[in-house]
Length: 119
Length: 114
Image (cartoon, rainbow over all chains, first blue to last red; front, side, top):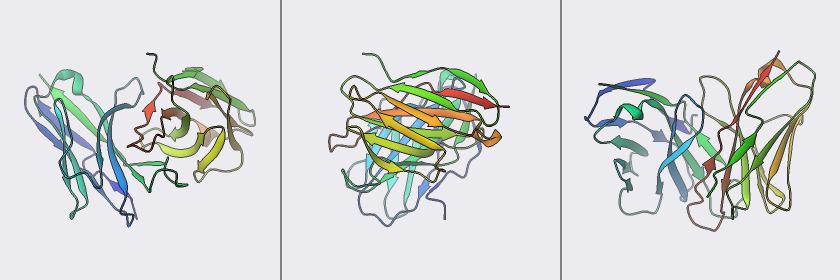
């Protein structure tokens, strides 16, 4: 079974509008972290936002917020006030396990969603 | 502060050859992870090293090996290259301080095997 599922291969949004990118995950580990990365055409993965499994509040970083619904195992990324420079591939990723565990450093990525922002 | 650096940026090899990719982590970061990203897919975990010891290994053949040096830089070696090894190889560094351990990625090395 896929551990990270991103069901939207591509999304389009008008400049200055908000957009939500979907991510669902599958784990039996009570301790995990969820990450979103942006990958422009240059290839570099840019960290956007992090949500820990025990965090009580949804994470926010500037125009990025994470809609974390633990019971539904979803961690959707919301980008507000879209800009042309937001056009890129977006990846949801999960890290399972406690610090120091053998799998702690491994990130499992979804297939990504290509976001296109129209002027 | 400088981010994660990788060299070379691009590489062309032929089948059967060997390749070495290099990564320097963010200053102060002691952990380095390697990922392979085939075109159109998300990155796949290859290795993680922390304090010069292998902490994790993904589902990759023994042709893939890595090491970490005392200055925390790292090398990824791939022997007996196959066409399917053509990919973007990403290096990521993290503090491993017990916190969220966010991994910060370098620009990657694009490897083309002919």
